[in-house]
Image (tube, rainbow, N blue to C red):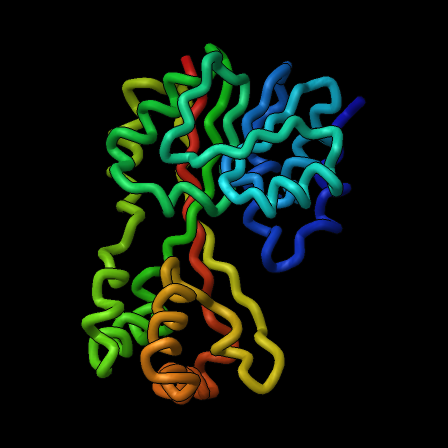
Length: 249
C-alpha cells in the first residue's frame, strides 16, 4: 500500500500538527518494529500503525490511566506501562518516535545517544519537542511563581529550559547517524474563549505550579498570570516546536 501523506492532514489539528509533520518527514522504508515513546492514549500510535500496518507498534507510556485508555482506543497497539526515564528495551527498533515527550527527561547528552543505540541499522530516531520556554507566557509563569508568597513552595519547579540549541543535538547525533534532519517550526493558533490565552500555552511544570499555588493561596493565585495574558497581542501566541531526528548508519 502506498502511503498518502494527504490522508493524514485530516488529523492535523493544533495539538496533532507537530506530530503529523514529524511523521510526514520520516522516510519510507521497511519498518517492522516501532516504539512510540510517550504514547499517551495512542492518537499518534494509531497513525504509525496506519502508515506501517505490518509493523509491530509498541506504545510506551508511564501513566496507567493513559495506557488503560489506549488499550481501549487502540487495541492493535502493544502497550507497555513504563517510566521513560527507566526504559531499557531488550531489543532495537526500526523506528523510535517521540512526540512532545523527551523534554520531560533530563540529561539529553546521555539520553539521545542511548536512544540512537536502540535504533536498528538503516532505521530512524524521530523526535519532536516544544522549544518555547522563553515565550512571554512561560516567563510569566516563572515570574509569578518566584514573586508571590508561595515562592518557597514552588521555586523548585522553576527550572532552566530543558531543550538545548540545535547545535547541541547535531553534535550528539552526528557520530551515530548517517543522515541528520533538524528543523524548527513556529505554529500559530487563534485561541478562543474568555480565558483564551490562559487556557492555551502551558509550560512544563506549570500545572504543578498552579496546583501548589492554589493549595497555598486559593484560586486567586492565578490572577497575576491571567491578567498578564489578557492582552490583544497574545491572542495568537506562537508555539515553537523543535525536531531533532537522525537515521542510524
